[in-house]
Amino acid sequence: MLLGDNIYHQDLQGEWIQADSHHSNLDGSQNSHNTRNDTQKDAVLISTHFFYFGSNAVKIAKPNYRHLATRLRRHTFEPT
Image (cartoon, rainbow, N blue to C red; front, side, top):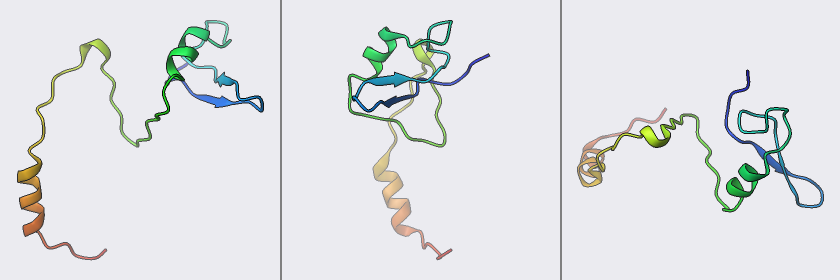
């Protein structure tokens, strides 16, 4: 069983190569639809924690950054 998201790299000619993953074709070959869709932007997600809910995503309230900033200003941080 394959898990994970799409992982790509470029070959020496600059062509995108898709690693064998859940999003490849069943035989492990590159899925050209996913490659075109996934490589059209110049953005990447780098994270140690990531949750993807797709169409079942829940709405999360916008954080109150002003309240957080006020709390942080009052906190004394000790060096580690």
